Image (cartoon, rainbow, N blue to C red; front, side, top):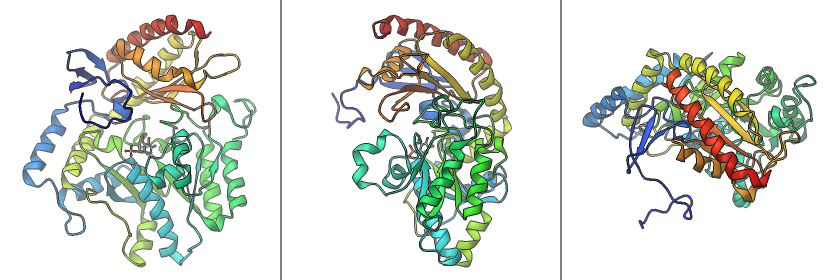
Length: 445
Ligand SMILES: Cc1ncc(COP(=O)(O)O)c(C=O)c1O
């Protein structure tokens, strides 16, 4: 018994003791592969000596200074480093403390940009997609398109949502041979219906994450989205909170489609879980509109731009680059995905295994033939997570992906430092966990 108000008070939580590399240990000494890096966060694994040293060094100098009074060497160094990694003129880093703060800040930045640029006060809506996740604060949740919104619906902003780019469950009933990338053109339909003069931005995750389990769009999807947004004077907000900093095999996932967004939201992998951090990376054009306008982005959080988190992120990003971990993510990711497809798809309840780099998803279904999901009350995603934990693997479950209520999937997103041998260890443990799970759910077949 303790006094922590947990996320789910009815659930029993295992107590973590320590972490080392890709492994976590509980207080009974059991070892687990952290196969989801928490929630696609711990990209360098646990207890990385370089990051720990940077953290201690900075804490000794100064851990906190408020951004309304001070700049600091770590934030300048981080912004320069990030500018060197982003495409086009995405050069200016606005710092916050996490992913929801980043998407929330991007929403406000997009709105204020049009006011600063030419006083277009009518442009404020942000269009997003169903089966997306952009965070839990009210603005971020308004953009989010999954069941996390339902209980709070009366509090949310009235923002439009379009169809997801979910090929396994194509909202337009197409298959790869007949695909016309209708999901991208759905944006144009929404813009016409809403009136593009009321819309400031479109936000999307390049590879869908928490709400749907690593769905990868058609290769032309973001190119078409970019064209539509340019035509209607709409900003593209690329939510790379989960995908950014190497997770999908590129530094930023959008690079793989040669599309340059206007704003990038980053968090998780930027400080790899060693200290809370998030940011919005803005194009020079957007920054300059603020500079030539009021000069002040009317926003900010107390911990945004604290030197400790920034020093941690400098060490993280340097390590990512020096060790070429995006390439490792691509290579080991490809191997892992091929193996998992081969070994997991034969199970009767595995509908799809998908992903990009080391961001992968497994979707569980009641019927492979019809893609019928398990009913939500069975809690299949949570149950398989518990089973896999008994087999020494931690995954990140989600539900509601099929129709907003039903549907089970989990994310696999091991630290980017994972080796091929460790991937083999993960695959073997995964297969034995699935065989065990098959025994448990036989009655639902
Ligand atoms: C794409 C995306 N955006 C935003 C968020 C919210 O980030 P945070 O949980 O740090 O607030 C998440 C978290 O999973 C995410 O995956």
